Length: 123
Ligand code: HEM
Image 1 (tube, rainbow, N blue to C red):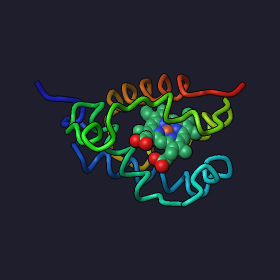
Image 2: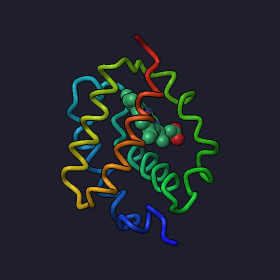
Image 3: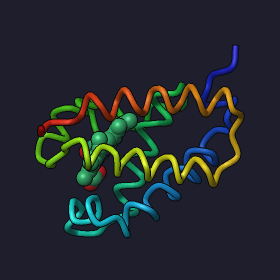
Image 4: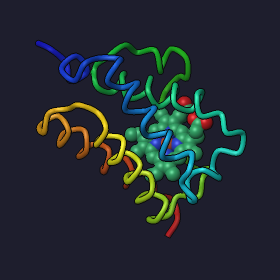
């Protein structure tokens, strides 16, 4: 049985997706200020490792960062519905620029929307 990770193209796919995502985040007026040290490379690496692990790839994320505890790790950021929309919009744009089947995109998108909704911590 192949995993979603393998089906979409493994690490190359996730690297492309996350680098496209951070290219949008870096110039987004709501999201960019959340990264005061502008270390896009390190942030991209964490998100990439996390997504790879979630979708059945290597578990490097947990080895390096421990339990994801995403809600807790996002508490320090002001995430209102507008910030969530900006985040999802950056992901949608990144997804537009990678090759992925319609079915895989729908599955990934469904997860990302649920996860983003669960991280909203401000009215
Ligand atoms: C809802 C809007 C969201 C905002 C505004 C947001 C913002 C941020 C920010 C500012 C960071 C710190 C960057 C860093 O230095 O690593 C971060 C980290 C992270 N985010 Fe989000 N995020 C959002 C949604 C999500 C979603 C939906 C996921 C997963 C599907 C996610 C996964 C992660 C991961 C894995 C990290 C790194 C955690 C760590 O190991 O320290 N984020 N996020």
